[in-house]
Image (tube, rainbow, N blue to C red):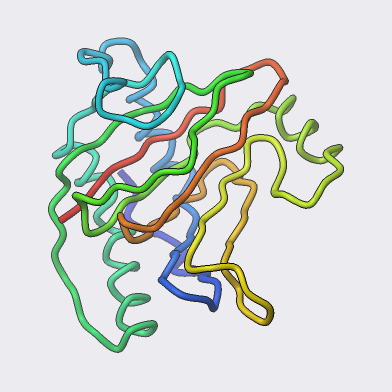
Length: 196
């Protein structure tokens, strides 16, 4: 695993900290091992909100080890955002999603976790094209939306992003979020985890 990460990150200025960074290409190549069937030992659908056929548990210890350099970067961002140091997280659950046309992850949150994350392993080119051609006010097909507070004039209550491969988002587990469905071919592959 390559620990030489760029060290850049982004977060929107609104309510809670939604941390966004890029995982290095070598690290994503290594993490992509979770897409292989050998890692799909246990179905995760029974404990997840998604209307997605293929969701599987993965090793929390392995994924935590892969993410550690990026969690260290998150700790820096957390201190900058809240002026409050944290320096240790424990991964309590991790799973992989193979989302295809017509599937959806409705608005939900992870109330039993302090933090959650999602890492985008693969975004099909057909989905990128579909999203690019989308006309509307939402983030569009395959995008993720975070909701915070009540909508009101002069307040930012949503953060929308259409993910790219290697994007890693870390956010409070009790922050409402949803993933919009898409129609195009291919599988949108992401890995998610919860932390305490």
